[in-house]
Length: 113
Length: 115
Image 1 (cartoon, rainbow over the protein chains, first blue to last red):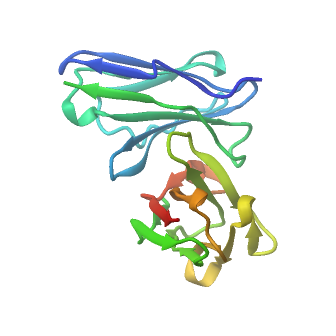
Image 2: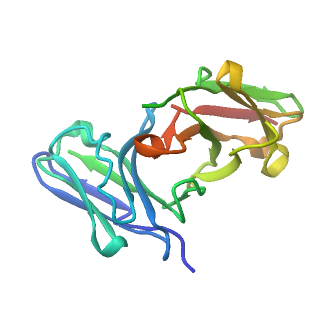
């Protein structure tokens, strides 16, 4: 079927506003990751969901960032009170199992003005 | 927690030159190792992976990587690069159990191949 789908593809928001980024993983994939890709910074791990286990939130940069995964499928990454340094491409990836290769979405480019 | 270092941030080669991109990881346990590639305007995709067995693994498009456990390295190689190999390359590692299961990426190496 379809690959990992992320929406929106682009988001421009004003500093201080909240944003929600959505990820639809490949059906049947139990693992879901959020990464942030900033210019010159590589891929920064944010959060990892695996099945029904408690998510690994160790990469979230501050308490303004949160994510949930409903019904083991769709995930939403929420950034509250956005700051200019939050501007980046936010990538979602899923895999069939923890050690399977990741399938990446095309990302959401977030620009905070 | 594991970490990954890619020491070359930008590599520029001419076509037909040989390529080696360095990757070192830090983790005390058993690891799975990956190289991902991001071509211009495209999303990340898997190039090759190592789980166990033969430490020399072959991937798509003529790439290979060698796992050297004693050096904590997983360098990517290609004997003769092409212009179409221009992309950003990311090394990644995951532990095989517990809290180390999250996939950690290096900062990436931008490869530019001149025609």
